[in-house]
Image (cartoon, rainbow, N blue to C red; front, side):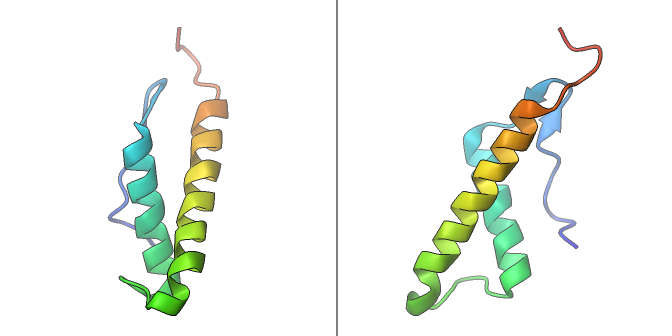
Length: 69
């Protein structure tokens, strides 16, 4: 579905926060069908980006990568 979203973890090192937010924005754009939401949808769009970024950060921070130091 979101082929343009790059991998956000290389080994034990997660991506920086700004890359996580950009990936979340790409995901929300793809799912919503809006590249740039109308003013009346901006708040819900931004909240979705923040929620996806938070969930992604939690996921990446919680993964156990075998062989990592």
